[in-house]
Image 1: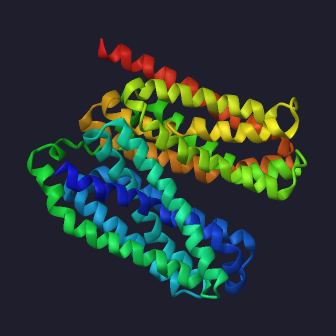
Image 2: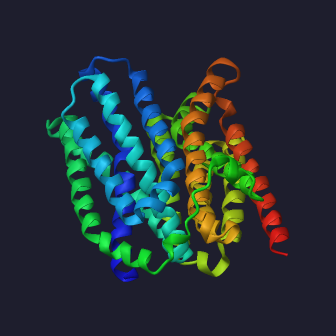
Image 3: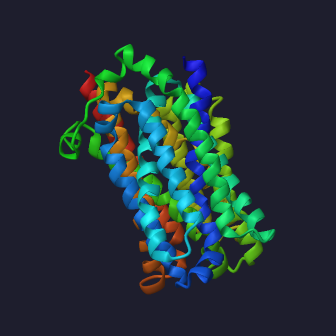
Amino acid sequence: MASLLLPIIYLSFVSLGLPDSLLGSAWPVMQGELGVPMSYAGIISMIIAGGTIVSSLNTARLICRFGTGVIAACSVGMTAAALFGFSVTDTFPVMCLWSVPYGLGAGAIDAALNNYVAIHYSSRHMSWLHACWGVGVSISPNVMGYCLSNQFGWHMGYRTISVLQIVLTVCLILAVPLWKKQTDSGEEDTVAALSFGQAVKIPGAVYIFVAFFGFCAFEATAGLWASSYLVGYRGVDAETASRFASLFYLGETAGRFANGFICDRFGDRSMIKAGTVLMILGSVMIFLPLGGDTVALIGLVVAGLGAAPVYPCIIHSTPDNFGKEKSQAMVSIQIACAYCGSTFMPPIFGFLAENVFSLGLYPVYLAVFAVLMLIMTECLNRTVKVSLR
């Protein structure tokens, strides 16, 4: 069963990444046709993020009732429907309505599949699966770019990705009996649907929630504001800045493929610590005036490589840290915290850089979250060691 399910799960992780970069790549054209300000992309992003947080927090309850296979198929189906809705929409309010199932579908499958892989597969598969997410994120801007450059329009870009999601939905529906075999074995019957209040009382839970929040705040801020910092503060030309800003994500994706070959050997905790230290080092390199702009540009790549193992290894270590029974609830809340970090902290940086400090705050802001992560994960490790005695 594992050999049959694994390709489906890999494809699902590619599917997770496909919608994530569509809005950013299409919005410069979309906002003109929709007749709304450029800033309205933030409204759509916030609605999607809100839906993702809500569905993530309720994933454990849904899995207890319906099982992982059904939730995965329904979630991708909702995302496919929302993307198709985007492709036939010409008004901003209707697009906001379609953003609700868009977010709800994305959050549920993210939490469900991450926990399933954490329990049933090795750390290397978790790293490769999150690299597949990076593949999906890389594919969709190229699809959208092709549609825009060949006069097909952004509607066709969304429609193309929706068709891919529909195909995957059919595959997941056909695969539901495979997931049911796992349920029949009794392994999924042990899922505990914990409330947030119950979860935070678990020893070490607060540490990992804060760590996940900090990681995604670091990741999202690093990717969103890299070009602005390099151009507006360091004086790097726009083309070079854009190329190296994208290398943060490319370094993260390539790093996850590479980590798959070594993470089982060194273990999740060692990989998390090493990655976090590299994130701090990258932030320092971006900050230092020594070596000119070259050191700062390399620092972005180092930060991306450091970020590579952190997310998958934190998720994969959750069953070991908190037990298989509680892992689905813990993963769900961790992902909700992750989306809170990636949704709210980059705009806060923008506000601080524009109104209080300057773009020079960028590496310091990143370093604060990286150090926070290191502290929280080390506190978690000590707490888990004590609880196991």
